[in-house]
Length: 428
Image (cartoon, rainbow, N blue to C red):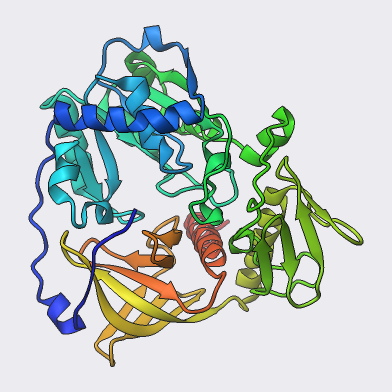
């Protein structure tokens, strides 16, 4: 899916008035019916099936539906499972660009990823209490990079208590393997299934503390799609299965050089030391010569995370990137305002550019995660920062830096929160 873009000077973008906030609409049955029909070919191609657990205890609805985020087929899956029940969809605000009327027609609620949005809670309450519709939400907020769950917002249980409706989880299997984000929108042939479960009834929500609800959510959103692929012997035979793997495995496990990995065909190769790994049909890696440091892709990814954490701890972490800059100011287009420089270190993000007109800083405590994506709307890899007033889409001119920026943001936030917690402890 593409997005509308427009060249515009930064000062003219600043003059664009912020869109007026609107309450969500009840989904139009004709539009949602059309989506249901358009979903059929992909669902048939993947032989989609789903199972239900405890759904008889959920009652008639409305519900809060929480789904893991693997690929674009997620929306098609939900249209199959819950049709014809009306539900509003919490989605990223840039999804409204160029199709505002359509997104509102199918009941979408715009929000900014990883930006505090108080109005979102009011919109969700409006949907449930006034429109009598369910809410579909992807609590991870971003697609998985390595096939494992991404961090959930803390104290999500507080929102669940406020909404006071049963919580339904939809956890998919096979959706990630069919279309992993790093693979450049190349679809693989595999089956897709889902488990639909009533995680919490209204009575259980009332009796459980927030901390216990959060723990249940963490357990529900714990998965490893690559491990599951190996366990079930699910074969991915496409010859492009390692294309773009360097986007997530950017650091050589042998020589530890960054930004020189090349994922192409069925192999991952370091352009610096030449070491090559073959990706087999079960998603595992094996060195063509010598030791295989990590056969399991999430293990390699987590090793990189540990390396990033070490750099943050010893103060050596820094990304200093030339970027092209896009700005979201309304729902008409992403405005390309020129080039600049994005710096990320232990002080957070600093973005400068547009001939000195743009200077934006974002502290490490701004959010627990980072809106980062590969081949974003078929433009390029992106790092998005910003606040409730304006979002900045930074397209790095250097390759394979997005995963590191995302991990560093997550780890730096945890470190800062730990420091705050330690500072609050009474001295003895």
